[in-house]
Image (cartoon, rainbow over all chains, first blue to last red; front, top):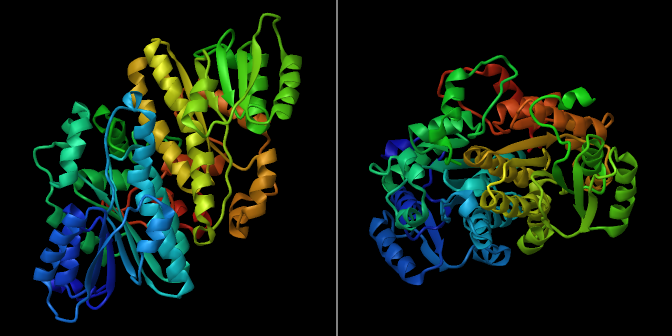
Length: 272
Length: 272
């Protein structure tokens, strides 16, 4: 695996900050970063999970001087996100949860929570980190992790990542966004409770990706310099087309028809 | 103009509900709808502006039985959006404001307000309306109006519109979204105070579109059955590509290169 780090971006000796780092993809990514010699700080709410995660990270340590820390914070508010953030110049924003439901069945509370858990939980950290990095003239990396099932929050997050990818070029800060597919994580069990049957059918629930292979995919996408990193073939197509699922007319006279057909199918209706 | 109404969707005798209907595009759209014989209710916060708008709408009346009303409500909260909504089966969601700024310069308050004024102000009404229409088994129309300058809120709104366009097909409810360009509206003066110079340059501030022609463009897009309706050539390209502004790699080996070139230019960096 270490040949992966030979060029471009090498995490060795860098301060990496992973939100949602106590379980699932965030933890898998933290393990990879620790194994590559990075200093890693993980942030999550649940203290017991943080302790367990810290043990796993300690066991992955490759150098006695590596700094490995954990912080318990809720990240859906601006103040606590800023408070949680310490010196770190590679941010992996894995915190978040999605609760896929049909729109017509959503409550007002679920609408608000969806934006909190799918968007603000990453946006507040990104805002605090961007200001800090720009003020300190520090180069670095911000990596968003988005569920393709996050309804509107997914699009908001993608909009944020795209905007930052352009704007932060000025400051030498690289921005990436990973479009996650179904993963075998604790979050998946929560998702299943509300997910409409058609969504499970679209995803093919029977073969979820492991957090470990998703984590490798993220780091490999970063190595290649991709701003948009897809979780598998379907999200790659989704990333490549990014047209969403709306019925569609094309003023250019029908180019990109292969994508069009994929976009129009009802089987993509709930994705994004 | 009335030939416009001959086919497909004719507003005559329909109950139309226009948020942000007291000024700018919302008012221009309300005038068009009243002239076409619709019953029109406008919603906005400022009561004086509502009174002025009501006079203009009354002067446009074509039938003494037309119902023309105004309501003063703030629409950024779920409760007041639901309370404001009365029987109306064509909704034109024109309320909203944008304050374009560089991300790195944004305050936490501006971030929150951006999502309130660009997303929730329309999402809450859409949620209340969708539930009402589906419960009453009423066919209808929901038309979102989005500023292409709304940063993340723009993407969230587009995600909402796309999702609803698919999901609400089941219920015979049509969904459209208009990507507004710079218009000569009262909101424009507010925008100018914060807008980065590069954004003005991209937009070509010297030739903003009139609210009246934007309103006609919306109604014509609805007539043609377009889900995505562009405000001018630039937003049409943006609508057609919808890739956003991120640096880009293409796994299909370079199709759609014309779009790619447009997407990659720094002159689109702030759009969306």
